[in-house]
Image: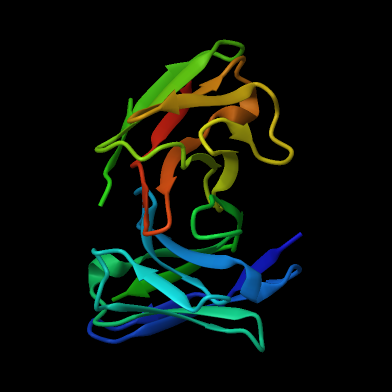
Length: 118
Length: 107
């Protein structure tokens, strides 16, 4: 059973950056993909990007292209999502989730990280 | 980028009745469609993947169907714990998109 544990809540100033971590336990980290999804208060889910460490593949949503960077450290089984040029509209809960392959649903989710931009 | 549109935005159903939630895609993409349930303050939970396959531990009252651009999640007999928000999710080798969600509330 894969478990994903995310870093704690952050408060950031407009124009700054935030980096959220997602540490995996259980399973072989590099053999599955990690996807990042955010949810603004009272809103729906918004896909941001994903990484498949085994193949070194990274994809980004057009919405966030150029402003988000997704990376992974196989030695620590940790994925990261960095979002730059923060604005108030980026206030949201950010989730990481595990996918067996890129073309799979997300079957395990982190607990979420609240990022407040103010 | 494929756009996923869910309807209705809110669905009011009585416990024990059937609920039918819809998800329409802006273009045909095959069967890579999932459904998630989300309760307040919690992360989403995978219910259905590959259009119609229930995830591990998901009760049989949840079923998914559809093809092409029209997909449906059916909950056959609503239990109190089923009232939540439901999202559809398209995924493939190049990207992913989510619907905006349907809130299932008690009538």
